[in-house]
Amino acid sequence: MAWLSVRASEPALGDTRYQLLRCLACGTARTSAGALPGLHDSGAYQPRAPRLHRAARPVLAAFDQRRLRLLRALVPPPARLLDAGAGRGRFVAAAGAAGYDAFGIDPSGRAAGERSGGPLRRVTIAQAEIAPRSLDAVTLWHVLEHLEQPGEALARIAGWLRPGGGLLVAVPNLESLQARVAGERWYHFDVPRHRVHFTPAGLHRLLAGRGFEVVATHHVLLEHNPYGMWQSLVNPLTARPSYLYNLLKRNAPLRSIDLPVSLLALALAPAAAAAELIAGLTSRGGTIAVSARRRR
Image 1 (cartoon, rainbow, N blue to C red):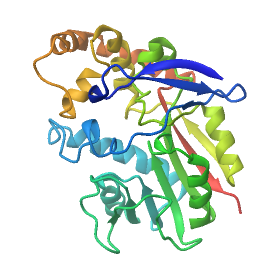
Image 2 (cartoon, rainbow, N blue to C red):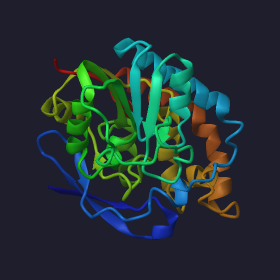
Image 3 (spheres, rainbow, N blue to C red):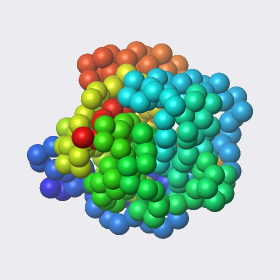
């Protein structure tokens, strides 16, 4: 069912709008127009490092440790781990340091550490050649929403996992408080890169149909969620959606009326964080992490 028209989040696409189609049964939505080539190698996804990336390292390391705690609850090390959609390989390195036999795959130019047989390979899930039942765990951290056919990717991953193997998936939550408050200017829409916009029920249904059993769904996550709430509240006030995010990603100019607006809006950060905590505790977190196992 045609549901909502959303403006492109990428400044280079101007005022282009994308229609979202929504499933009446589970609430998950899909971006109707086809994906554009090159969007995962340009703009906010360009290979060069973002602004303030060195200062952000301790925060990113803390996010990785939280993800590792979720992963250990499913499959403790040592275990053979694939991080699908690994980007520059930061989590692969963290998991390796934590005792996992970890490697990653990613189709974008950010997979700069690519080398044959090494920890990071530049390849898609559809192209990857991985032996059946050779993995103990797979992480899909904000990857599934980018795929045109996420069900096919999950079916392929299920074949790589041993029976009882663990899967950790994180996606934006279309049923979140921040999505409802921000409407078409929700930070996590990111159309047209994001092809599918999941509800928890929609993701659970997809996983069950591809041979997985959901173990737990986590709504309280410091990675993405407090910032996502703040950015979603600020987006209606700026000329371009997600200006600060794009500025940090070297995808927006410093000389913009949106800069003082965003700086002044930083005063809203404590209230946004508090609102997001309440949302998470009431199962309306901005993003969710789902722990699942491949059925035996």
